[in-house]
Structure formats: structure tokens, C-alpha cells
Image (cartoon, rainbow, N blue to C red):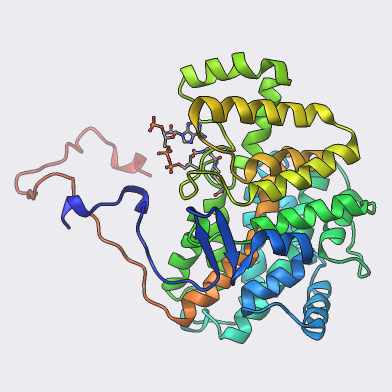
Length: 391
Ligand code: CMC
């Protein structure tokens, strides 16, 4: 427990192997199972990328058809999970709603498994649980946004693929191809990113041989924070505050003078730009053209160039995805739940990988409290407290 060994925030610590993704900040690249994420986003449906993350290879036509069939069969929101969502206050944060819904979903799935010794599951059981979580999350997220708008649940459509069905269940109408494509790309870009805070959280929970659902619920909690997944929502609050491109410079003067962190910029790993940004920016550009919103692009470009030139800190994925989700029609608080729907693929791939070569994750700490002392002679002053009134 030598304090000089402390790596605050575990920065620079290599905690384990992973075969799922490779982040290379030097070359500004991100590979999922060896494939550059830009290539996957440009060519694949999200279902195929989910398959890749879980199984290590892209699916052939039969394997993709099987996964799609399993996904479609598990899209509907179970009545009791819907009832649980309805119990969550409508003005609670949607991430609390997602966390609650997933917790119940897991409890009903594991009902009957009485012993903690049996909960961690076989590889086949965990793959099945992963597919079902992947399949049901769009219903949870879409219904959440709808009920906040006072709208009813929309049932899934068997004839639509994952991305198109997600938009259908959210908005109750079929989205245009350009919108489906941009949304599909965002899901792929958000799917996986090695040992980020929420994935590491899932691996810590899994390392105790707890169950997959407990690990995912814990990961949702980690993702909620604005230093991690909450940033895509926070970017929109920044855009709303600034208002328009011509207000960027004075707004930034004040924000930097008060030492504010500008959401959507900076990254623990990428110090020279986030490899996912150009692909998501291209998707945002297609949405800007589709919805004819050059004002959004102007504000985006103005804040980026002003901030990069002043601080040399580059945008991360949340910077283009926030405005993209807003243009598609998602309400700002729904953005981080969208991240959950995407990242559940990476989380579950890591949970299965952790179980395949498990070691309990249990670091050390350097103690900074009082020196050893003893209770001899210490008498609490309880005389003044009426015992009957104690809780
Ligand atoms: N705005 C203003 N200053 C910043 C920012 C920012 N967004 N990011 C870093 N800095 C400054 C920071 O103030 C510090 O300056 P100084 O050395 O003068 O104190 C320096 O850059 C190093 O920052 P750090 O916070 O020590 O670096 P980190 O590696 O711990 O932080 C980060 C990474 C993502 C937490 C941070 O950049 C940040 O808070 N960004 C805003 C939140 C955000 O966009 N998060 C999404 C991350 S990517 C998606 C995801 O993983 O979910």
C-alpha cells in the first residue's frame, strides 16, 4: 500500500486483456474485433455489429437471420416491466427509469434461481440474456420518451430492422432512410469502447460472479454521470445556453473564466481527437441537410473551432451525437438512454469475456485516516437522548 503506487482514476492502469475492442490514441483508431469502427458504421446493420461483439466474427446470412429473429421475438415490453416504468415518477431522470426497468427485467428472468451460486449463468444462458436485453431496450427507451410526452406505448413492427423499429416505437411513424441510417451509425459508434467507466463497472460486478443483469444495472448507474454517458445530454444544454453561432465567443469567455468543463470535449484516452467523431459528424451533416437546419451546423462548427483553438481539446462522440439525436426528434433527457441501448452490446460482451477468464477485481488502497486508536475511556454522551425517541 505504497502511496506512490496510487494511480488516481486508474489513469494509465492496464487492468486486463480484452479481445473485444482496441483503442489506439496514437493512430486515432478504434477497432471492434479487428474491424475499424468507421467501416462497420458505414456498411453494417447494428444487429451484425452486436453479433460481432458477442461472437468475435461478423455473422453470415443465416447467423444474421437467426439473431434478427431472436431480436424481433423479444422486442415487446412485458406488461409488468411497463407497469414498473409507470411507477417511476414521470419527472424522474430517464436513466433512473431505464435502471429500474432493467432491474425488474432481470429479477423476473432469474426468478426461480434461488442460489447466488447459480446466478452467473453458462455462456449460452448469458448470450441469450444479452440478446434479450438488446432486444427489449428500444421498447424501454421509446416508451419512456412517449410517456413523458403523454403518449401511449407503440407496439414493435416485425417487418422493420432494429434501427427502423426503434424509431418506429419512439415516434409512431416510419422514419426516412437517411434518418434510420444516421441512427444506425450512432448505435454502432456507441456500442463499445474497451475499459470505459461503465464497462469496467460491469466487469467489477461480474468478477464477483454476480449475474449479468446486476452488472448491466450497475453499468447504467455509471453511464448516467455527465463525465461519461451523460455528456451527450449535457451538450444540448450547452447549445441551448449559447443559442446561436454569434454568441459562441462571449459565452466561451465566461465559461472558461468560471473554469467550467465544456461538455462534449476532451477524453481520457484520446488526446488528439476522438476516432468516432468524423463518422458521427458525417451522419449529423446528413441530418442537417435532411431537416434543413444549417443553424445547427453553424453553432456546432463555431463552438468546435473556437474551443479547439483556445484550449487544444477536441470533441468526443457526444458532441455530434447530441445534436443528431435532437434533430431526429429525441428529447434531450432520452439521449443517455440511447447510449445504454447501444452500449449494452459492449457491456454484455465484456461480461461474458470476464466470466471466461475471471479474477475477482479487488484493488488496494493507501490508508489516509487516523492512526490506530482505542475505545478505552470513550463514553458517548447519551444522557440527553430519550431512548424511546430513538429511531
Ligand atoms: N472543458 C474544459 N476543460 C477541459 C475539458 C473540457 N471538456 N476536458 C478537459 N479539460 C481540461 C481540464 O480542465 C484539465 O485542465 P487543467 O490541467 O488546467 O486542470 C485538462 O484539460 C485535463 O483534463 P482532465 O479532466 O484531468 O482529463 P481527464 O482525462 O480526467 O478527463 C474527461 C476526461 C472526459 C472527464 C474530461 O475531458 C471532461 O470532463 N469532458 C467533458 C465531459 C464529456 O464530454 N464527457 C464525455 C467523454 S467521451 C464519451 C464517454 O466516454 O462517455
